[in-house]
Amino acid sequence: MAVKNNRYELTIITDLNPKTKKGETSLEKTKKTIADMGTITEEKNWGKKDLAYPIQKQTSAYYYWFAFEADPAKVARLDNVLKLNDNILRHLLIVLD
Image 1 (cartoon, helix red, strand yellow):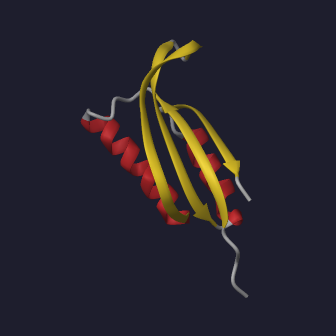
Image 2 (tube, rainbow, N blue to C red; image 1 turned 45 degrees about the vertical axis):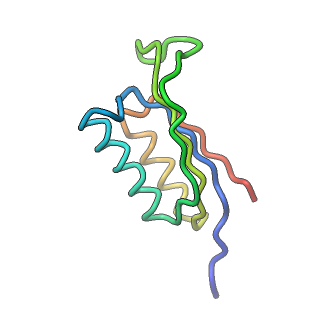
Image 3 (cartoon, one colour; image 1 turned 30 degrees about the vertical axis):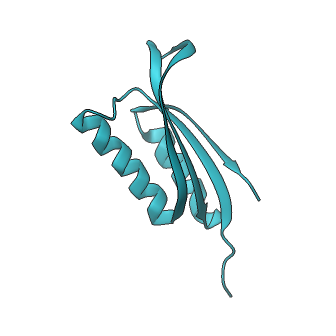
């Protein structure tokens, strides 16, 4: 029986500049993690924004948004991977279906 994939949106806030090698590598690693679990349907770079309050002594950060489809059983692993990534200050993962 085929597993129905749910649609998700993920917003991440990172302190790494995507124009640096380390920032680019970190972003590609995050994209690959998402792609391994499902299909990325859309992604947007919202750019650098000031934070409302400091997070880990950072006053500004880079925002990224992803829309993707994935097996619900695999999404819990994605949430854990994002929590363990030191370069991601915050993330928000929501289910659209």
